[in-house]
Length: 426
Image (cartoon, rainbow, N blue to C red; front, side):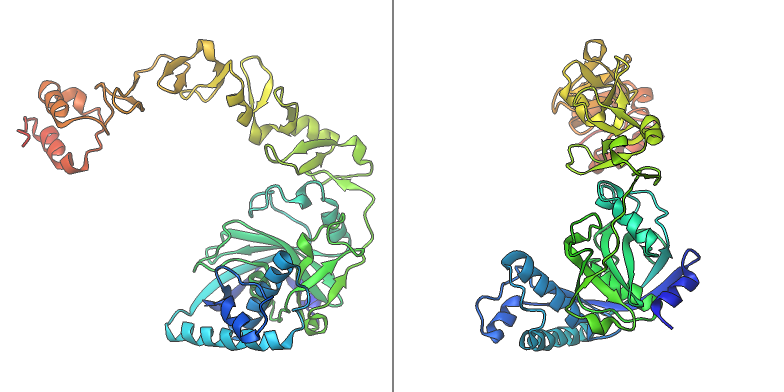
């Protein structure tokens, strides 16, 4: 049996429960460098954070991955993956940290759910992946994954709320996971939801181990049409140990078509597609087929970029479409707070720094400048006790419509309203 065989039994069918014991552990990189005896080793400002899982050894892998990744990204040091001396030092301090976590009673049990699909079935952004290049300019990556029987993996918390998504490529009867986006960045308990942590959660759900960090490429590139974020990946499966610290090349054929970023339709000539922005003022764009472009997209008449109508655009009083973020840049337009519509500034009623389309009872506080709807010349934050006392004595009907925010006097106000009598302020 292989992990691929086991996945195929449950793919597209059900969520798998993954229950793991966890505790956040930490060691100082200065301790590692001092014992290693080499000043060229980098110091990580906040130390090394890892998570203790069901297998205590896993925390060593987590910290090694973090340290090696930091050394590679910030210092260009790429020779630490197979450094046994460094591994032994990290192991020693990691185990000490683990023992302390256990001693302090910081080990807790957490539940996750894992869902595997042959194709993505979520809306971009549902798992924190809005603007991901696999939904935009690098959508060929999804095409290649689908054509090679890959998997879209979703992670949920114990209440089955979506928290993260990632992709998995089959490789030699194992799977390589990569390109994780998470919705909250942290899961319950405060630990960072990293790709490493996701590998452990998924591996636990499928009863397979995970490996340490792998470099995953396609056609010798991590940033080609099969875009793999920084080339980072983890192998899950029986043969995971064979590839530890090695570079893996999927060598998948490059697709000669592009999928619509909105409906997923394959289009052979991307020059016939419409380029649009997923985010305002973002460099990354996506492509849409003619049908989706006509139905879902429109051009902003201010910056002449194309955006999604449903999420980003509003109609101006001149009946042209604009991105909502550009309205504030157009001097003659304002957004009316009472209708939510864009109107001409010359037709608006201005109160303080707000604009209204219709006549309003709102006023600008004479003390702080805030706009409020009330009967005094000051908002509830600025009203004095003398003003309140006078109002209560003269007009109990109006005061019942007014919301005060004076916590220290709330009981007095309630007594006055309930008993319909004057209170002597002291």
